[in-house]
Image 1 (cartoon, rainbow, N blue to C red):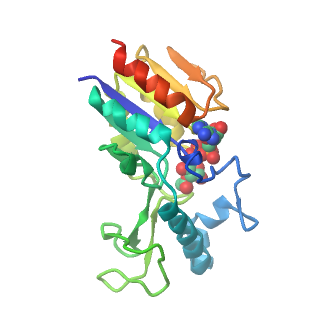
Image 2 (image 1 turned 180 degrees about the horizontal axis):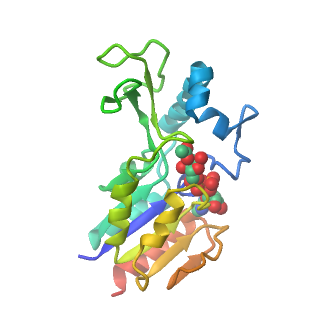
Length: 230
Ligand code: OAD
């Protein structure tokens, strides 16, 4: 079975109603995202950081996967599909994709501030000051913040290297190390880049650029991949 590895970003979930980072000029209540999603923000104002993620978690309960997510799930009929997502939502999983690696963490999880191995599934959208792990320490969102290491990157690199087909969907490719994953893909394999603002990625061969929304482009592309012998 051929393996398709997919790198998705915020544009993947845009048609579900979740705004992207850089399209919405990256602001939240007049704060730059980098000022809210950082260890410094957590030090300075944990209530504000918790509120930011509580709002996003609440919104996640109200949105649904879109046609793009469902199309990718269908690829599993014929391919071994591995999704590497920068998104912290669970829309790929809810659409039926079975192998999803979250590079930047998961909104529906919290983790201990003293032991990164203590990770909890949240049953409710709200995480509050005073919510603690089993060691009695405050819980924080299970999110990779700006300036923090990306623990899943080695696993992502290993997966990307094994791809027979590679897709990039809805990402501005400016946040590293995620954006660098494309350079680990085998040179000659077929690649697709779906993003209305997709740019030419230099030094990458055999890449078909589709400047359309994910929900518009993916059903057709997936249909094609399920029929074609690549
Ligand atoms: P960005 O907001 O930087 O980029 C979103 C991309 O999605 C842009 O290139 C848009 O053109 C594209 N887009 C918009 N609507 C689309 C649609 N309907 N279909 C397809 N593409 C669409 O988001 P990311 O690249 O995901 O990190 O940002 C990377 C990381 O930066 C995020 O994971 C987040 C952020 O700060 C953390 O939170 C750690």
